[in-house]
Image (cartoon, rainbow, N blue to C red; front, side, top):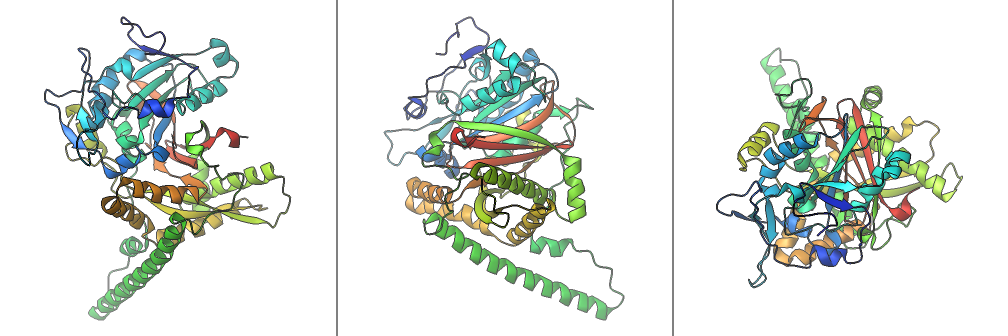
Length: 505
């Protein structure tokens, strides 16, 4: 039990100083997690429901992939704690994954973990840490980073649902307070989590309405042909020629897609099989970095400025974000190495996470929150990977970073690499087991340099349990990579960089 947590306490208290020596032993020391009921608990059904943990969720239980999602939410006002507790009890705590524990029957042959419903005691999940007032007053930004970094060293209690909300009620330069949400990655991927979070929010302009989200748009050569608008044919001959041109465009797009997919798959297989790897640089993580403390640093950028560059360059917001990341990594590399050769260019590769399913509808997820049932809404971990090169170089024209990023992104959009990586991993797991799938993923991560993901947030100001959100900064830890996770929200883009402590500047 944590210090200061008494039987009569209404909130769980945790000190910042922790012992991390036995973290791994504590986190998965017991194969069977007990389902604990509490008179004050919420979210448990009268009859326990069981559901198998997904293959990707099982992967996140492996020693080298005990991945967790950490998202920091900046607030525009001090935390309204009673409203937060009531809101979490009515929303997050009712989600099937947020009121379930993983149970493994060690006496069963080829046993696989299952999700089993349990009661949720909010005192186990809403945590108000005891921080040094002098530290939070002297340098609140560093105090926030230190606390979030400390979460990467703390094991989660697997006898309760695998999520926590940490209340950091002190002002920083960008927000009046902050909430840090930590969730085990087996619960769901970033898209699921952000969609769930959005379903738990309300519009600041109309607190009774759900927030607006941008419409989903599919990219790639096949869909680009479908989106192309043509004037109506003026004659039957014109209609025939138009149909013939469309068919030719589809054939060419398919051939390009097939060729690029073959090339990308070959490179991915060579990387996972340790035949192809990035050269060691100051950016590349050292062996065992997945077990080391992580540092989460975020910067807020103007989405209007990003869109201005997008319009001038005739590219996408994602292309601009890739260019910004490439420029930042280049500056970091040359500053740390002290190299002055302006013509030198180094290529490192990033494993980019791709969502392979339609984003869960916010209305369906909102209904799920109200009923506590799945209601057919898609959930879990359905993500593929594709390898994207980042060129580290000095450019006199900063826009050159965006040009190169746009060229790379357009090339990768004409490939089914991410679909192949998802299904190949699934087939390896089915045929050879979870250990083989983990080895495949570990080979891919250790022979590349970065991880990169991008998510779309709300297009307007939102309230979470009555607390107005200023920024969202998601990140992950527990895998052998430096990570970058931009999220776009209501006029801003928050870029979160996750690194090991020996790589911070």
